[in-house]
Length: 259
Image (cartoon, rainbow, N blue to C red; front, side):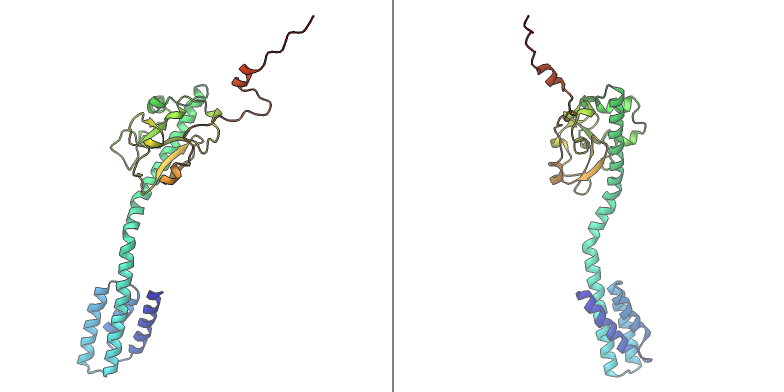
């Protein structure tokens, strides 16, 4: 709001000073300042313009108007520069982490799908937690080695870890596969495995870590979100009428038929 008012005042003052005898450089400094370009350039141009007004012996009121216009426009420029400077670190951070975040999302999505393909070829069971990298890379479920490297931690042979609680489980028997964490950002390296405690702290990607669910989707989560994800798998509910292995073993034995 303040910037808008200053811009309006500068525009009015500039319009008042736009007469045949007003120096072009003075007008340019006003317009330059209103547009938010560097204040130093506006001051230099304004000083040169005012000097020319002195030489042409312009009326006092015209010189006052030009001075006020230059000061007003320069204030706008300074305010814009200060506001821009306050946002600059945030923009740089977003630019830096944004590309890494997109690559990491793609990597973990691919790794999650590779783990599901491994399960399809191994009686429905997910890779062993302590050898998951060997399982999906060594057996060809991932052909691009870069998929295992997080761009925010290129020094690690693998920038991700496997949820220890899911190692060797039947993927189809895990309830809430879209919310159950399978893979995540971690500094544990090759075949890294663990739980919530193994997530990167502080987060790798500008306040967030990347996690992939059993279902295949990858997402960026904040430290608060991480605790609300499912880390300990829950067994899927059996279909109506189906008997789970536990229920089958615990079913009562019918009494013998009397003769």
